[in-house]
Amino acid sequence: MAKERIGIMGGTFDPIHQGHIRMAQCALAQLELDRVLMLPSGNPPHKPDITPGEHRYRMVCAACAGLAGLEPCREEIDRSGVIYTVDTLSILHENYPKAELYYIIGADTLMELHKWRSFETVLKLCTFLVCPRSWHYTPKQLNEERKRLTALGGSFIMLDMEVLDVSSTEVRAAICSGESTPNLPVAVREYAQTAGLYGAQLRIPEGPQWLEMLFRELSSKRFAHTLAVADTARRLALLHGLDPVKAETAGLLHDCAKCLPLKEMQRIARENQLTEDASILESGALLHSVVGAHLARTKYGCTDEEVLRAILSHTTGKAGMSRLDMAVWLADTIEPTRAPYPLLDKTRMLAGLSLEKAMITSLEGTLQHVRKKGDAVHPATVETLDWLHTLPIN
Image (cartoon, rainbow, N blue to C red; front, side):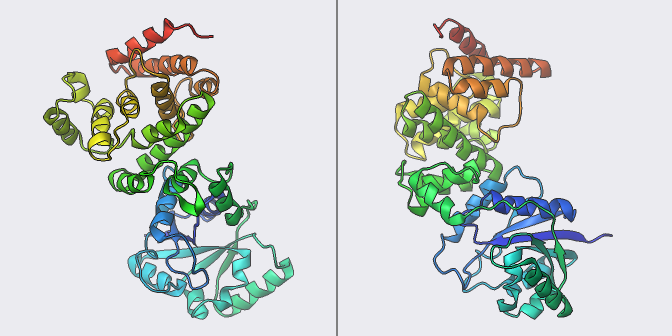
């Protein structure tokens, strides 16, 4: 039986960005690895002032959600004391005794390997995959060092990839100032700003507490989706003159009940008399909005009625829904990680121009998709579309 081939992408990930992700995906593809462990460093001896490991791990989870083959790993942040790679590799060999380990590094790190603790032991514990990233050394210097370390028992494979030059310092500064971050996954940016990392001003006072609760309650993929919806809702609100904090808040909490088992959602709904609609009670895809609005109030402490109404109507829609409701509904359907569905691209384009037109287009695409599958459409969705067609839309 062939050994599993596991890549290891270590780093402070403060925060994780597209440069890290590209390196991991390149290694995954070129070496045909089974997976790459994305390993936030714990307490590295050379970087004493870094963001707490739990925040960095959550951002890694948000960035990797939905990316095949990239797997967040807590191995280092769950250990106390100063963390050394030689110890991590030894532990990973114990955890995966039948696997071949491939450690992904940049070319600059190649020149620093001799400074690592017990580096000669490290050379024997893995094969190094070297990305062509070097600002301080010539190709001749890199080649000579590779040959020297190979003679000491090391194994090195040079990856063929186009370098994406991303400065973590510049990314952190952009998060702090609220500037655009094109090389940062949307979910990571939203997490950092909502948590108030890197000097970012807290827009939602309860944000850090809610992030902790949501990360615990949701799957990684749903958590990343939630962050992307919050970011998209805020952007739509700013475009259309709505309250961006209300929109972002509704986006953060809109799926807070999504990962509850259906029976648990039904219990909460019945005990609190949230709905008598049998079709909603039998569908987790619909019931989570009703239960979510209730939990947003009772568990998360959100008392803003506009926000709660937006959460309540984000699945079926509602005739007479407010423009804030529309912004949140659309954010849920067009956020950047959303899987394609009929008329998605057109809806995204229209969302910046007219909430009403985008709603009509998205609902028509949704109805087309649902009916094609032979599923039933909830009457509230049809009523919402009929109501939208009565509005005077420019």
